[in-house]
Image (tube, rainbow, N blue to C red; front, side, top):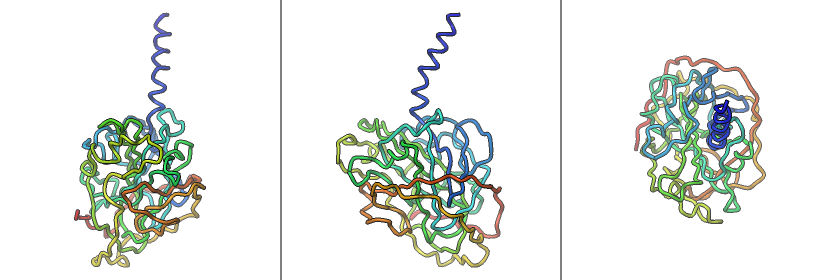
Length: 321
């Protein structure tokens, strides 16, 4: 009988550890919610690539930096449009609120090239940054605090992005241990979308994961992270600029525009500046090397999903500048 108290003690000891990590629980595009799966437990089709562990990715050169811990291709590719509102809802390992409040959130995209995203190998993806959120206007509180409070983080897809299949890589970097080299915790996630519309914009530069960050980068190794009012430098590239792709005739055989449902997002009352690729800022923008961001909370209305289908023309591979 002594084994029972020992087992219970072990379980209770593990609870804080489980609660201290987390994963992307769901994503909502223009108000339509797509649920993810609990890590290492696939229970239904989703556009969010399944990871096998709630633990953070450690080390900027880790191969899991692309989409998370041993991420698997997802079954669904879901519709979006240029300018779509995308809301990311995070959870702790035990299903509660996201456990961290210190560090940035950044969003990248990558074309799935000549295949659909449910078949695309993310290890070769060429990523471009479309959004970043750091500290609020008070200079001390992070936008990530809103996620810890149970809100979803909302960003906007570039207004002129060319149609095709894309991965959306949304990540949280938790910096509570970043006062030591290698202490940063990376939580990347990947969602598979098919962008419609008739845009013709392609990014001016791309990066790879791993490769875009170094453990010694400012913003990843940050000895001043707990100093009130200290400035913050986002790691990785600047927000991508979009240029017209002259060879892209969007009116030909590209996917037709999908009419979005009314957005359920609402701007959080705290004033923060916006850094979004191809979008008009909701407040004054500042250089991408300093802490700023856009955040919102979204209502999550569930909706139907569809399985990916091939279309006669897809985006060409984006080439790194």
